[in-house]
Image (cartoon, rainbow, N blue to C red):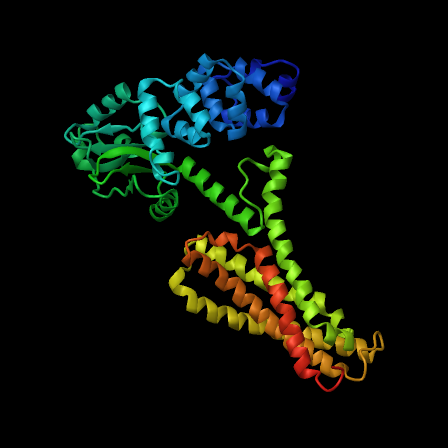
Length: 456
């Protein structure tokens, strides 16, 4: 019987685990099970854990479940869990709370944790301070490796921040960092100063989470120290929190590109009406935009009345423009997010996308022209005696509309970035709607020029 099945049967014995036991279950696996079962069973199972295990498992739960569990246990239990959390996990949890919730839970912390938390919350929500762990393993450079190891054993607990040891001066100024392997693989009689390499990349407390992600990639580190303007060591940021930051950023971007407001909780845990609200606003905006399509077609109703055959190709025309625009927007938004291109590259991007639009337009236009010719000559459909001019109209319309789509899709994100607006808001649906409306104008303008004096 699986652990999940045992929990549902009221058997919580396999949750009382130890790292030294054969039946040890990683806390992330326990947390995953809690998200898959009804909340009442998850709460009972959580309360069956030991006090220390509760704090460990709590860090692996999603924010929605964390809040619900805390609200369902006693204030004493709430305080015990919150005080047991590592400082970075505590900051991340409190950052997700609303003001009234923060006030309630802060009062459950001991004085040290409360002071550290309030200091961290004083920084911007996008600052590295919001993911910083203040529990840091430090030593001085004048001592031997043997003394350093003994000092660490007596003054630091076994956790993720102990993978890298930081060498500091007496005023806690950061000097260098030492991976634990360097302590283990060197003669214990050596002094710490003898094994320093003099290279210690760091983050400043004012840098953003996005800056931190870039530095982790640049230096290929699993932990980076955080310092203030005077190079005083304040804490560290670890790779697990950076992975969470990257995942959240990617999720926000994908949701915006899809034309949805950012969700506060995972999809399956977002209340139905909240989900409607997040989706409805963009849909209404896009719908109002698409209404301009009807206006545009109304302006050309004379042409449509004279040549009804033109209306047959409207879906083909506007979808091609919208698709090309969506492609370009997606490529440029992602390239900007990865810092492959910046605002200064707008001219390069514009030239590249116009050329791409021209090439793609010729390709699609040729297919459209051939399609009309084949259908006409095989008598699958009669486009009339001026079918060739109609085919030429479709050919040039597709070139113009696809070029306009790639141009719009590539430039709108850059313009938004220049205006300090998230480029991801130039979602694919937004670009498609814009190109739909303007595409009709391009199509009927070209048709009126080429077909004038024939069917128009």
